[in-house]
Amino acid sequence: MPDKLHVIWSLESSTQVQSIKTCLLDKWSQREVNNFIYKLQQFEYLVSHFPNLYPASLTHSELRKAVITKYQSIL
Image (cartoon, rainbow, N blue to C red; front, top):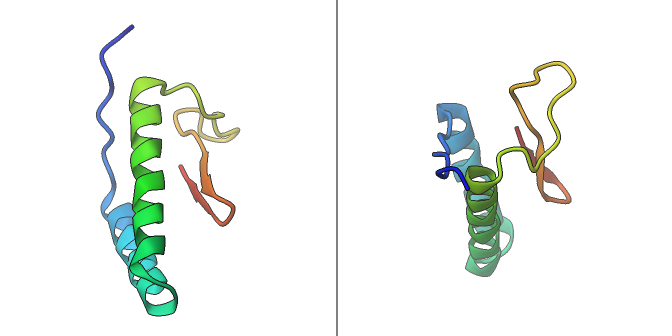
């Protein structure tokens, strides 16, 4: 098995994650924030170990789309 890849978050992605966390805290509770962070960590693990697990974009083959929750996806 090849070495795991390093996941690099763009500035926009990091900002969006912070916005989502703030929104979850405003409308829900710390539990939902923790669940969201856990799902992101699962995503990081999977994509770093199995980068071809998620389907490639039809327009940008170097990008892959992962569904994190019903309402959130990551490219």
